[in-house]
Image (cartoon, rainbow, N blue to C red; front, top):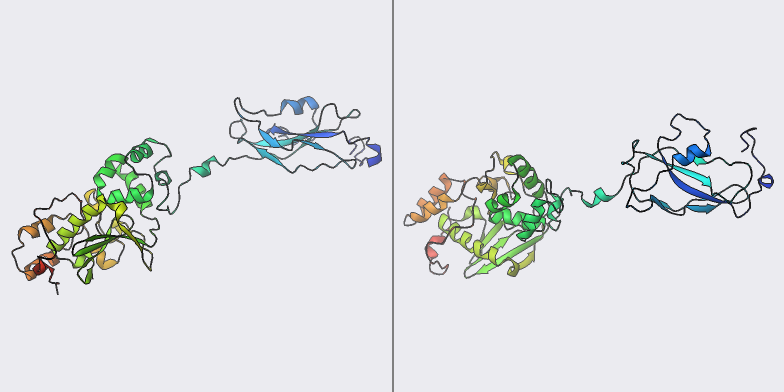
Length: 358
């Protein structure tokens, strides 16, 4: 286009041979911000943005392209290597000019694009997952940064993914809380985020003489199989519950050796204790049984297992007395698995304690 007449120049009159090349450049987003459509070559050159010191070239790809006799060039491969947040206006423009030395004649004015923001993908690598996967790295959880102090402390203890994080919360919540070192508010957000994970269909079975215990992937007991019967925890008598917990302690130490099985239905997502009308304390965060089974199951969760230990001291009482004690205190399902056994116990020689409560 001849700017003096505003008429298109005929291709035969442009004298543009195959040697003409165009150069693709990055310009400051403020260039021509007053909507002027005319600028000098010096003004254009002064607005070229160079890469930051120590960085790669700001754009890479097909930066030198030929122009045919009809004044057409195709730019099909250009990529930015840096974002635009470090310049004052935080925006770039694309500029195109005739390569110096490839054209001699009337000045051909440079082409300039609209301004735009360039973002990078580095943030994608550090994004949190909603919901997280059991196999996700710990730093995918809220308030835990990649390679940050919390991430490093947990990794030093072998806690590298969400499954190991939640399993430690089941086994020893006080240790996990100490490793994390967050305020109550941040800790609640992080733990609740972790508990939204999909636990899939896998279960883990620990087999002992007379009793098999089934765990979900984060170490919560689902059922105890005693003889030919399978019981959820809330149906066990206090003495039975105590010894199941003792076996669970052994199972945690041998976790990698447990038998892995697959259930027909996926495990339900963990529900916060707040949903059951209770505020969780540090000790209450260790749930020996999954709080996600059903509403009735939640009714049996709430306090530490001191009541179970007390029931052991009065195990000379009848089965009906034990049942009454259990019904009088439904909140006996939280557990810190450091309870020492007070004596040896065998399932075979204790048939009297397995009478099922009506």
